[in-house]
Image (spheres, rainbow, N blue to C red):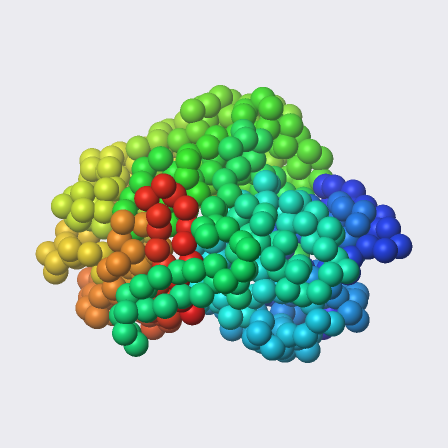
Length: 478
């Protein structure tokens, strides 16, 4: 494993000098360094840990690591993608930590994890983690570390019971689940120690959102500085985990958060990325564009996450072109207005056409659309309408390069569509769209149907996950 990648980092925070008695911690991302260091969530948690004097934090990736302690007390994982699941097990084996939490002894580290995958549904992973952090780290992480420090020298059971008192901390071994029959629904869930009966997911409600803590040429997005503009999404599409898992919709303060963050980042790089599930729905987004269009920022390269279709106007397109970006990405899900109503995608075909026309008029050369097959209620005619929509876009904005990226619907916990399965027709429908669109000169990029099935199995088929009507999260069986 190489340590050369770390030498290219430019930090935007000052790591603490660890105390002599600091807790040795390994904080891992179960993928390569270039992928992991591009994850804003991983960066934020790592910086939070690294700025504590009472911790000695080392990073671990599948292809690189810092100097690792021989006897870590805590091993943490940030999990952003379901298909990184197997890498968690491989890294535990590499560290010579027993895979199953039940087999770990007193002298072995507590293994904790967090991130959107574990918050959405911890149960498929529960046997491998001593502790799972549910929710957003701004309010959760420091409380978790403080609680561990208070029982650092206690026996393992005492440590786990104490950690389970922290809001948002789930200790799987302290809960028992019974079922109706061998393959039936959950019958009862009981705490088997003096711990809360329910674990409440933690939600940060401030208006100062995240920004990069490190910039490096080794990241998947080279030398990019990322700023979180919004969190969650107000559109509430019925399949979308990004909306429901992180509610409520929050926006970063323009003057109190975004402007200062951008100034910090652009002191070390000329590439800026604005992140969020629906960036252009920030109430002051137009003012943000005006801010970025000031002369002192003429030489920056600007990238946006997926944007709301109806917000793609000529000013946005021209701003992107001015800042060296030639394409924009929008999610349309389908060319069928009927199907979009089913998923609560509040979008008309006229808006999609207008977005393409505005993109071209503003100087953009390409537009990428995200679509999906296998949506509950989908019929063969819906695919025909998707093909017709792409043909209409090509005619309405000639010369604009069109790409349709298409995935298979995978049910996600917490969403209204969580109980639907993966459509067995989805693979055929991906191939049909590919045949119809590529023959018309439209770039079609399908995601793997087989990997979508694997993702669905990891997410839901291994376990049940119940949601209390008050918003509490109740863990079901492993």
